[in-house]
Length: 132
Image (cartoon, rainbow, N blue to C red; front, side):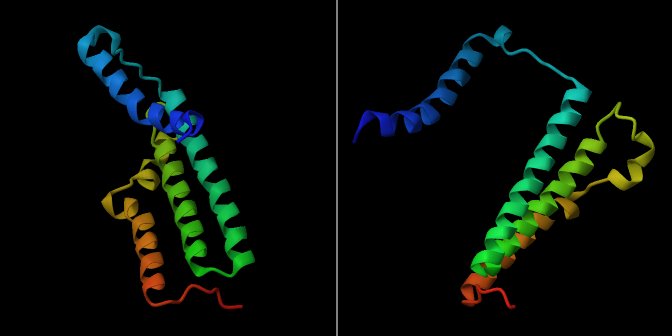
């Protein structure tokens, strides 16, 4: 194996363990940072990224007429919706009046997982084409 092909995988496997060892050896290096506006924007950016990925997978699903990809795109968009709600539920964001609309529980978090199970069931039955 060539080193340039193995090096990224090796760094991805070893670097987190090395960082954990450093933090365990020197606990003062592990600082805490809490910023509600940064949390809001990071989670909202993740939601927007999920929407873009969902759209890209949807376009690929339509082009290939593949129902599995269509369900995966719906899972991306569903995840984006819950990420958006999570961003809106950030304390200090001027949407505190919307709290009843942003209450997410274990049932809402399981929707993308249910969609992923539907993909698996569709594959098991051999139904992978999108109807016209």
